[in-house]
Length: 241
Image (cartoon, rainbow, N blue to C red):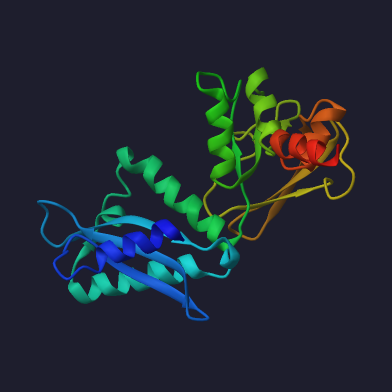
C-alpha cells in the first residue's frame, strides 16, 4: 500500500482540492482506499481516479464498501460520477468492463469469456493473454482458437475450452445478461483434451448443460495450468533443483 499512502498524503494537503480520498481501516491499518475528484471544466461532476485494497482482505467486500461510501459522498454533494453517467456510451465500454472486472476480483467471483471463431487472432498476443489473466478471467470458451493465443492462455493459467460440433454462443442463446455459469468435470485430475460440462444458469431460473472440449492439448500444458501458468511452473522447478 506504499503508493496508496503516498497518494493519501498528497490528497490530504489543505490546499489540494483535486483529490478526495476515502480509506478503509482494519486493526488500525489502512487496507483499502478510493480516490476521486472533480472533473476539469465540468461543474458538479466527479471522476473515479483509483481504487485499491490490500491483497490480504480481497474477497471481504472492501472495494464494494469503498465504492458505496464514495457514491454516498457524491449524493451529499449533489454531484454526479462521470464513470456512471457515461457508462452507457459505446466509447466507455472498455472502461466499464475494467471496473466491473475489478469488482468481480474484489468479490472473489471468477469470470469467463465467450468468443467465436479464431479467438485471439491479431497482434500483441502475449499481452492479450496476460491482460485476460489480470482481469480475473479463469476460462475462455469459443468456437476455435488462434494457435499461439491458445498456448499463451495456458501459459498464463487461463483455461481454454472449445464448443463441440455446431454449438456456439448464438445457438445456445448465451447473452451474458442475468446469467451465471459453472464448469463441471475439471475438479480432479485434468487430462489433455478431455471434455467438461458447461452449465448455463438463466435469469428465469432454468439451466442448460452442454459439453465443451478442454484445449489443454499436451501433458506439459497440464503441468503449466496446475501451477498457475508457465512462469510459476519454471520458478518452482528452479527452486526444487
